[in-house]
Length: 122
Image 1 (cartoon, rainbow, N blue to C red):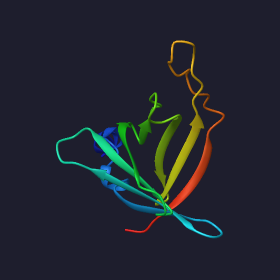
Image 2 (image 1 turned 30 degrees about the vertical axis):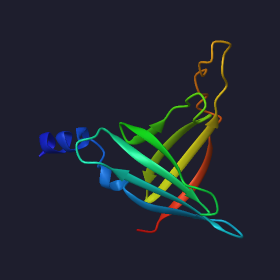
Image 3 (image 1 turned 120 degrees about the vertical axis):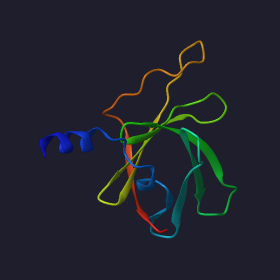
């Protein structure tokens, strides 16, 4: 019995926990995120639809343990982004990247992330 419990805890976090459409309600509008996994790929495509007034923005997130991570890239994304699922809610954590003189992002400070909570829609 104990051996089977140990194996269950070492399994990868299921991708289906992230996949789907997520929404954050705000006072005058809703923000929408869509997370998709392609068969045979080791990353997720995160589509930031936002309010739908501007074109959607797509980023590739790498699975690391129980989180999806998106690192900053020059001219693409200036944020460190961590996505995790707890109690059927998506925790969307962001931190602005600080760049060094060589154009490389400095490491993120774990205590400075801002968190937004999204609810699953589909």
